Length: 147
Ligand code: DQA
Image 1: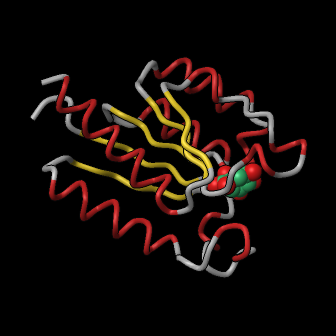
Image 2: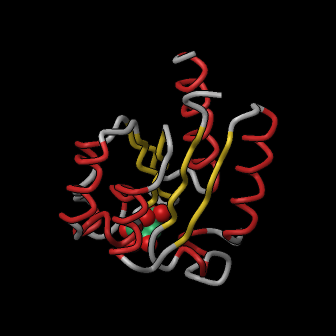
């Protein structure tokens, strides 16, 4: 099927979910998130690829070289620092949603600035694991509306 593939990118340190600052990020693991996303995508008959990377260059390569129709990205700490990821998103010209588990506007000053928010379709922040589920819902709706 055309226009059918969603790529999910989890940025640095998100492999530590469950163990990492659970008061901020919750007790669920990355595997819990990915299982939910895969099940939901399967129900909707949409293809999904999920990667986690701690490397800015790997994330950029994926954004600019992989084949996909919609991107869901939690750039994690790179949200606040990476002009390179911002530029990659601009080059890729694919619809994308920026996701955060915590509410970045309720935290330290340096987290309140995202370098990617103004180059993506939308932002979902602060809803825990649900941020990803809502992003996937929106991506599925978008994909179905393109058919
Ligand atoms: C995060 C928020 C970022 O500020 C932080 O560096 C992360 C995770 C979130 O999902 O809440 O690693 O993107």
